[in-house]
Amino acid sequence: MDVRLLSRQIIKFGATGLLNTGVDFLVFFSLIYVAHIHYIFANFLAFLVAVTVSYAINKNWTFAGQSSNHNLINEWIRFTVISVGGFLVATGVLLLSEPILSLVFAKILATGASFVWNFTLVRFHLWKK
Image (cartoon, rainbow, N blue to C red; front, side):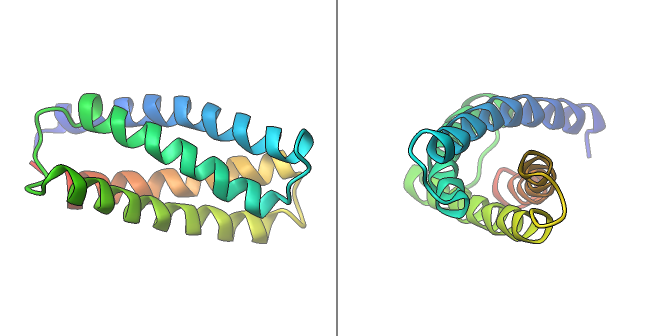
């Protein structure tokens, strides 16, 4: 395993994640405080927007040149399924932590848990070299 490549991918995945987290948080908190949508439904809608951005950036930048051995549609579906798993992890963490933490800290914790899930599965099961 090329440790330098893996390190670059973690950094790129993290940078992409920061951008997507910004997108996710913007949509999430806008839906809650502007549209007055329940935080679980707002989390779902924010996820849909962020996963689309994430797929495009990760395919074309983070894991550029690596093949998933799947056609584009199948690859996007697999990425989305992995991301749904990350969404479920994040939602579970959000549900468990929101009663004891502020919503902002609960969301940050949920995002961290989702990051670990997503990178591990995307790197080692979808875009493996």
